[in-house]
Length: 336
Image (cartoon, rainbow, N blue to C red; front, side):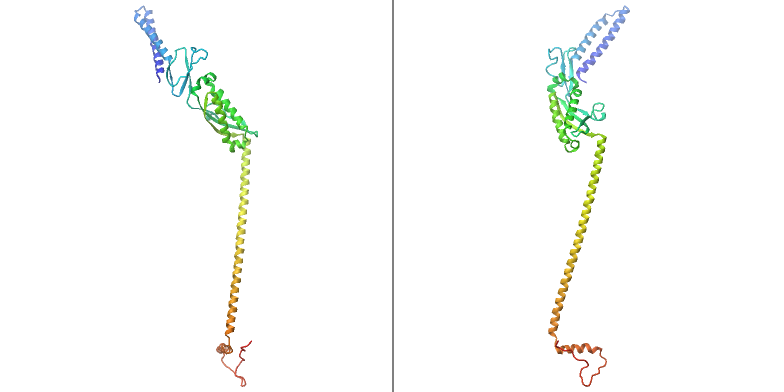
């Protein structure tokens, strides 16, 4: 509680006391009793009440988050003091001047489809149309504060109507103008941040011209009609199906390529195995030829006869030798 409020409370109590004393004075006077002391007390009480009321009406305490405009008939032409009241205790002319307070802290003005998301009641979302004719709904928040050096201009032009008569229509118009430059796909995805930046810069200039400072513009949400939502859903389903079909085709291609590589590997392995077998057979044939050559070079008639006899002997139980031939069978010829 500030000191100005304390003086106002004391002034009210003084008026209550004055009323009580006045009633006592009238009661004694009606019964022809001595009321001289009450009469003087009544006069004193009314003087004190008037003084306290005047002091309470003249003292003004401005909160740290406020600034005050002094409306006065004492300043000709303007009707206001040339300087606004800053935070602290001030004195004005009682019952002649009055103070209109304006918040200088950061304020937020939200426009959304549902009243629970904004500071105002009702549906204040911005309905706009894109360049391709689609109807969308834009929820936004405008964060701003009053320029303390231009509070007098705000009071002169807007008073306390700057939200309803300045911010709301300018935000609506700016959003609609910006949305109309983009297609619905761009608004929803690819160029959304570009659009938000464009709206922010436009609003910054508009508010600055009217004594307000834009802190930030927040593009809260963008929605569209149910019909367009269904078409978007169908499009997404079709895109998902197309992606799935492309994935299946790619998978089949990969499987076919894998099978081809396996078959190629098997064919290459068979070729390599065949080449190896042929080379092994060739080596074996060469070895056999060389062995035969060495064997042929080492054969003599005596050796052949010896080997013949050795191989024949184990199976012979009885030998009949003709009288005119010393051998049972003719010996192999050592010459071809």
